[in-house]
Structure formats: structure tokens, C-alpha cells
Amino acid sequence: MIYITIPVFNRRDILRDCLQSFEKQTNKNYKVIVTDDGSTDGTEDMLKKEFPYVTVLKGDGGLWWTGAINMAVSHALKVCDKDDHILILNDDLVVPENYIENYYQLAEKHPKTLIGSVVTDIDNRDIIYSGGVKINWLTAKVSDRNNGKRLSDFKNGYFNDDISYLTGRGVLIPSKVFREIGIYNNDHYQQCGDTELPRRAQKAGYKLIVSYDVPVYSYIKEEGHINNQDNKLTMKQIKKYYFNVRSNMNLKYRFWFAMDGTKNVIHGLWYFFMDFARITGHFFRRI
Image (tube, rainbow, N blue to C red; front, side, top):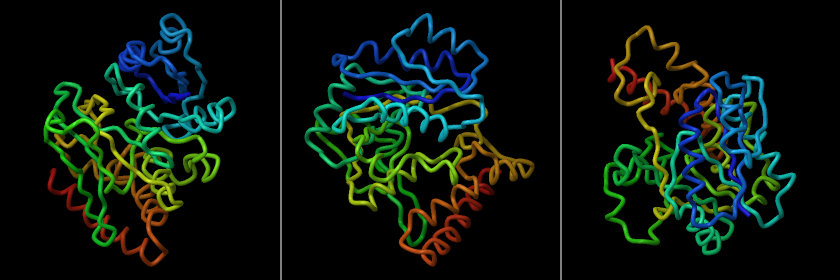
């Protein structure tokens, strides 16, 4: 069984699109768990009326991504069998009809592996946005594989195994991973904890791959998000850039990822210094 875990906060219509794409799956052997973290936009009523089969867990609005996904994962761990899988999925994704079917085939071919989805733009579903991320642990340079290439140019069965982490944009995780290494780290990462756990699993001996047979179509251009590459920045936004809970550039998250992801404290401090220099340059180039 695959347990699909989805956090949501005030994105009713986007979540509806996501869940409707699962209703079209060729393989129906899955269950959906949604953590609604205090939405006030009618998400709760929509779930009751349109998706009564979905297990809905309630937050108070203060869970953020990590707390919400941990609530769903913890629930799944209580009811799943030892050989079941848990799919981590953000709410702003739509999937093709063979998504679950292909994931079952991949899980059989790749045991002891966390399997991520290739990400494309929902407005242009053949153009790859993220095909797997590779980090240079000395320079903190991040390379996103095959960005801008056509998904249709890759043969069936293609996957990228030279990667450093996976995100919440679709990753199938054996339930035993959580039982062995724990759930997402809510102490260090209110948001952005999706990248740390796969790295932790990798250090514990699990493989990470991104499969191009399980694409997700993402609402990449979320209006108003500071991390949107199309947005210009001003000096007034520097505090938000470095310290806002929702910012991927949040220094707390990046410090702990440096410490948690590297070999030792010295390596972690060096990585954080290089990473800080890179994201600072990134900020000023966008002014």
C-alpha cells in the first residue's frame, strides 16, 4: 500500500486539482492523508463534500510544513504494514494517470531507495524544472540536473542517481526508513525540512534517485513568493530573505542543513560559510 501524505494551508483550489489527479489513477491501491493546518478558505468543507474518503488531520495553523507532514506521516506509520511506502507530496502538484502504477513498479525495482519525482511546470508539462539536485559539498554549489530540457527526450526507465537530496515535490519512502531514522526534524526546520531527511537516509545507507517515469506538474510561479526566480528584490526584503519562516534562504535552515548534511562540524561550518556567500550574491543579483 502507498500512503499519500499532503500538508495544506489555505490552498483549497490547488489541493482540489491535486486530489482530482489521483482519482484518475490507473492503480487505485493507495490511501490519502491530508493535514489541514487551520485553513480558513473552505478547505475543510471541500474535503468533506468532494473527497470524503480522504483521512483529514487538523492543525491549529502553527504546524508549518514540517509539523504538518510529520502529523500525516505519524498517522500513516500507525496503520501501515512494514513493507508499505509513504509518499510525501506537496499540495501544489498534479500527477499523471500512471503515477501510482509506475511508483509500484519502481519500488519493486529499487529496494532500500527513496524515489523522487522529476518536476515540470504545470503550464508546460514537457519542460523539466528539476531533474535531481547535486551538491558540491566543498563549494556549496547546487546543480539542478536537466533543467530546461524536454522530459519527452528521455527514454522510459531513465533515472538520476547522482543526487544529494530530494524534496517534498513527490518522494516515495519505504515506511521502514521512518522507523529506522525518525521523522522530519521539526526542531531545526519549520519549513524546508523535506531536504534534510533524504540526506539523513542517504548517510544511513539508503539510495536516492529521481525517476523520470513519475513526473509531477508543479505550480512553480506562485505569485508573491520571495524565492520565485522571476521576482526582483529590494533591500527592504533582505530580512525576509534571510529570516522569514517560508524562505528557502532562511539562515537557520541553511545552517542546520550544513551541519546535518556534512561529515563533521568543521566541514559543516565551511559549507555554511560558502553557502552564505552564494545566497548573498544571489540576493544582490536580483535587486
